[in-house]
Amino acid sequence: MHVSRRNLLKGLTLGSGAMLLPPMAQRILANTEGKTSAPRFVFVVQSNGFDAVQACPESIPFQKYEDRDKFEAFDLAEHKLPKGLAPLEELKSKTTILQGLSGRCTGGGHSTWGGCLGMYRISGANHSPQNVTIDYQLGQAQPGILPWVGVGMASGAQDALMNISARAAHKSMPIILKPEKAYNAFFSVAAGGDREKNFHLKRNLLDYMVGDVKKTRTALGSLAGEELDAYLSAYDQLAARQYKLLANKETLKKAAPKLDDRFTSEVATQRLEAQFELATSSLIGGLSNVATITSAATEINAQPYLGIGVDLSNHAYGHMGGNKRDAKGVQHYEKVRNWLFGLIAKMAKQLEETPEGNGNMLDNTVIVYMSDAPDTHHSTGFEWPLVLVGNLKGKMKLGGQYVNFPGYGKAGHRTVGCLYNSFLRSVGTKQETFGRIDPDLDLQAMQTGPLAELMA
Image 1 (spheres, helix red, strand yellow):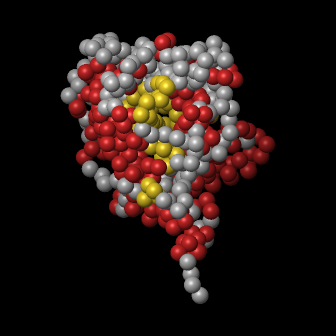
Image 2: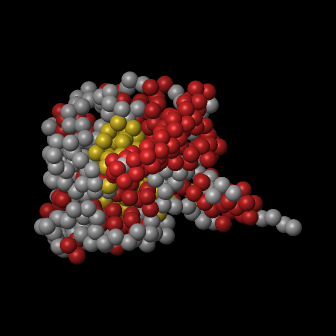
Image 3: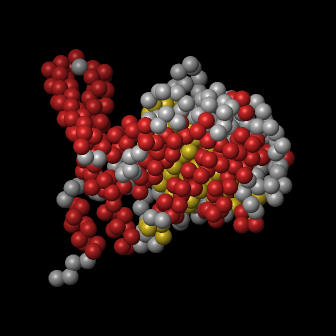
């Protein structure tokens, strides 16, 4: 009897249960049938604003948002990218620059914290999230082994950045800031030696803690209360994550990045290079379909870019101006952004070199670059420039274009929330609005539904 490759792969995987279906086997099966897997998203969030003029090629006449009266799309093949975006030149056909979408609902300022991904206004000293953020919601819709991974870079010594990503109101998800810790969290199951040993010790400890909490809850009965239930839920989720990692050990072993000195470097820029490799490996290995990478996000007065020769704090060159082509601060913005887009380009090329379906992984992945401050250094939210690399074929029409939406409040104007609605549609979630509503904009015409111009 002839056994097809498709049936063989199904036979190998179904015994483990659908929840633990190894992602690499899923991809092989998808390639055999010419199908793609779930859409993937990467959100790269940088501090200190992204002025609209710095996103505009010099050969395209720049218009301030208040002067943009109509929707326009320019073919990027006819234009050279701005200096800060130069590493994407070879990927120009896969690049979309979006101008004119607003995010006034976040309030703007030096940083919107999680408002950039949640489209809400942060209040209070602890910057607590007001709702789920787009990255985590997308991850929940069609999860990999994990729904989401978050890594980043900071100038300080802290282990994690909170209040950028969230799974619900007041429930932050940690952005891991130390590459070695991120590696241990995601890939130690397949690392061998002491790292793998520690993984199993943690798994055994979680099993013990779950069992202990269950016994305590049973003994207390109705007196146990919601607090003990919350502890049990948290430990259960952690234990389940460990078992998912264990079930996909061989897949993760193939995808894991090579540990080197950058994972423990004192130089922030070297650490972020390692974090990009971790995020790329997470996507290729099926660890998650969504990753968030932060570059000094929320840091108002920091010097995270000393490793590439920028000795001014981001706040200092922010005050030197970035909203005019000849402003003194532009050269510093361009140097920092050029380096960061180099990392984005490297990730995109690795995905482009990885076969999937009838094409490659980049055909079904969108990398979103944005700042946690909407526009300029002291941001307003009247516009929020974004750069998208990749596409979601069959779902969205992205690549090779510079897009101007009409300015704030004008006919045809749209919000960043509408872009997030577009992403949600691509994973099968029909949601009419996203985040907080801007009371100064027409709800139905400007804040509801996806961006029709970008949908397939």
